[in-house]
Length: 381
Ligand SMILES: *Cc1c(COP(=O)(O)O)cnc(C)c1O
Image 1 (cartoon, rainbow, N blue to C red):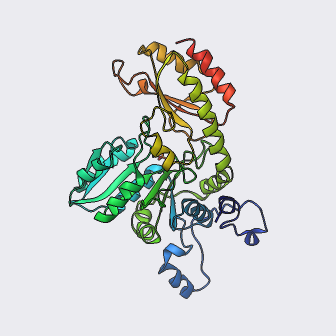
Image 2 (image 1 turned 180 degrees about the horizontal axis):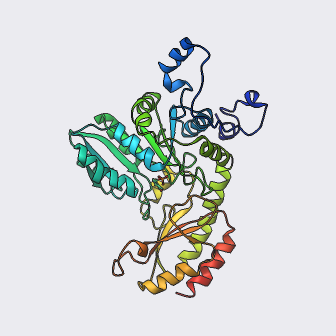
Image 3 (image 1 turned 30 degrees about the vertical axis):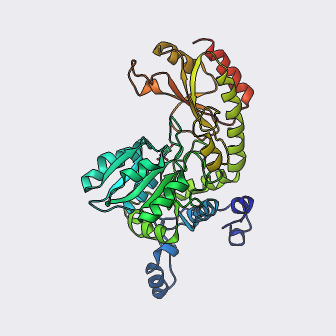
């Protein structure tokens, strides 16, 4: 199945809605049955039936089918946030007494889940530097049931060798999960590399318009069905039909948005690399990244997020730089049409060695416009 077919044709059912090109929003909480027997047949197999929108909804299911196909996964569940996807996926794989090995500094709420919530249920996690596969092997004990990955991870964009980690995890019977939000399936295909569950903050690139919070879990039919009947139905963090519809619309332009964001990012980075005000840049595809070979092997596109450190450590100058940028909004999140910055000085003290770090997300503006903006703002530092 090619990408265009998945995005434009797969799971569309146009004869059933007046041959409308855009699908309808099936805004309903429940579905009626003509006979008791048909109702009984449906409720014995809720995963495949429309009974209640907490389980299935046609608009949401259309999106799930497209997401699974893009991923090369057998099945997909859409959720109300990336954090819900992380929670459902991780909780589904562990019992009291189990151990998780996680890449260090995963997404902040994944860290919270593994350090604050799961220990209350006697599930412990060890965090390792993910740039060396041996670190995962060495941290595994006979209680380890799950390896949690995020490649690349936020702020410093370190990669993990997904294929190597999946190989050894399979031998030991350990489940692997990767947060693939940075890449999307168009850039990195973890299932093809042997990873069991791929999770997303679909709020980011997949939705791409800064107007929906959403999450996804992709994996085998067996694993997804188990999650559906347990965590998914119980925690109930569903994606509303209206938001699924907005995401279907977003998918139509996903390839072109990723291409634009990636191309502009390379131009912006080239400019920043030559700026005397910039000390360092963290990005998978800079020539001095020690993991560039792995990035080239594992990722098909460079993508649009990176971090810089300014040379100055003076917080007033750092703030001035951020505030004089006209096209970069100061905001959390990323993956939308608009360029963003997130300054580390919002999270750490004035004397912290990381105080001058600023995370950039490059949206869909013209490269020249962004570079001119950076130029005028760097002059003020
Ligand atoms: C934003 C983000 C999340 C959380 O997703 P939400 O949709 O905000 O709940 C998880 N992982 C990564 C890498 C993210 O950037």
